[in-house]
Image (cartoon, rainbow, N blue to C red; front, side, top):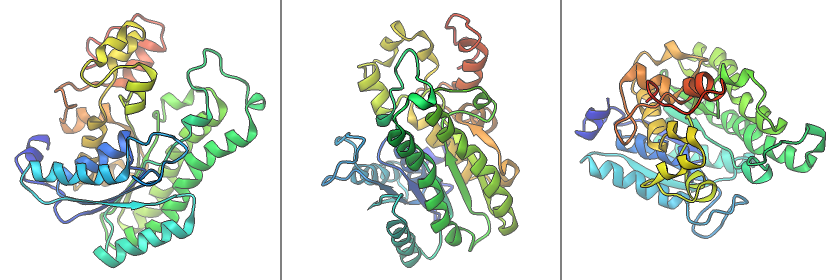
Length: 322
């Protein structure tokens, strides 16, 4: 699959994708890899070159994501296009207008990726001890749920009628953690709830979509080397990310956003993707199934490592896990 895209075979030529929440991180990488594989990709988010969302990262915009999609397609000598559409996915009228535009311009939607988030700024995720639910500011907690749950519901409600017009459509709910790993409580409360909900969404919508010949899955990256993780959490870059292992040894299992981008392409290009319907999947697990790798040629299986090594209290050792 990976080599085919690089050679220009482009398994997703003619497909129309919408990546909701494509400003940065996993969403940006999924949009870029879908474009590299030949899809026309509508990329949405709240941060543009004229407006910065509450996340406060002005350096990443949806316009830049669309340009990266174009460049990725051009690099393999194929088709593929990025179309930036500023959208607040908590505003149903904006989402309806987005879907109407996709319908008007393309007449179909084949891949819907719900990668909507932005809640980290309302939670102190780096705290050594997380507060009890009742000690968290309620307005912030509810904002987290709106950003991480309600936005997904609004987008699916507006976009799935277009997706189900044609059999074979794919809905990808993006979260942090697998069904198995999220059985353990991941403080704080509002984060755990927001990241568990998409797993159930994929299961529920899979039950409804299969009647229309479509598929829903939930997908998680592992420990993602997003822009914020690199430059804010660890003060490193993608080039020297291993330096962060000196302060966080288990960061050795981390992966670049490209990895989960390739996972989405593998799913979207699989004629038998319905076998995954309703399932909770990870980039590392899918790499073993489809044979793709991360940008550096490795294949980290982060969630297996996290459960078997990190959560088990063992010293950091990625041998056999990447």
